[in-house]
Image 1 (tube, rainbow over the protein chains, first blue to last red):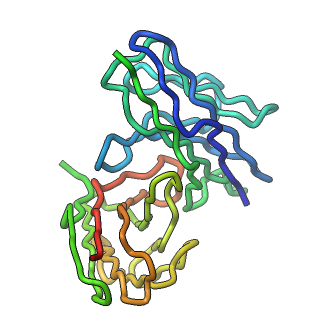
Image 2: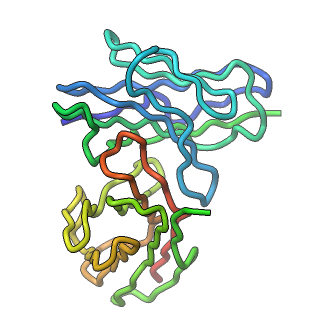
Amino acid sequence: AQSVTQLDSQVPVFEEAPVELRCNYSSSVSVYLFWYVQYPNQGLQLLLKYLSGSTLVKGINGFEAEFNKSQTSFHLRKPSVHISDTAEYFCAVSGVKDSGAGSYQLTFGKGTKLSVIP
Amino acid sequence: DGGITQSPKYLFRKEGQNVTLSCEQNLNHDAMYWYRQDPGQGLRLIYYSQIVNDFQKGDIAEGYSVSREKKESFPLTVTSAQKNPTAFYLCASSVGTSLRGYTFGSGTRLTVV
């Protein structure tokens, strides 16, 4: 079984300031990790994902995340936020099968609402 | 362009009525999923299907039913047995396993009055 904890339910930040959205996971097996963004009344859009290799992953819209296995974390960062980054962000984890493929299911955190203040 | 289409975007129903939410994809994805989203609770899995004519219950399947007669379609019926059906419902699909993540539809907001 696996679980995801997003430590902050809401994060307010001023425009052009840096932001970090925190995500911790627990799993008894190797994992794949994902960050999604959701704008109001819309579906979720994939921001970035970690499958293997470099622990620093770059995604769309200037976001990046770092996989830290020892701390079981996958925090999302952006050096300078824009008003258009106001949205809800979801961290998700998938277990890895013995074959190396992911399982069918993603487990999602409860989300972090990022509010960018002009 | 390929994608997932959920319809309708907004749906109003009277208490005690069954209602069916549509989800269609043209991505040739094998697996499809239904999630329910409530404020502050994240996404909760209702049902998922890995192949045609087969589906499994998720964490909150009570009061819901699904079918998977075609690869492209995975409709969700919210029955009168669902005690609190007002929510935002999201459909998603994936190639097979979650390796590439999911593709989501734009959601259906169901309000029961």
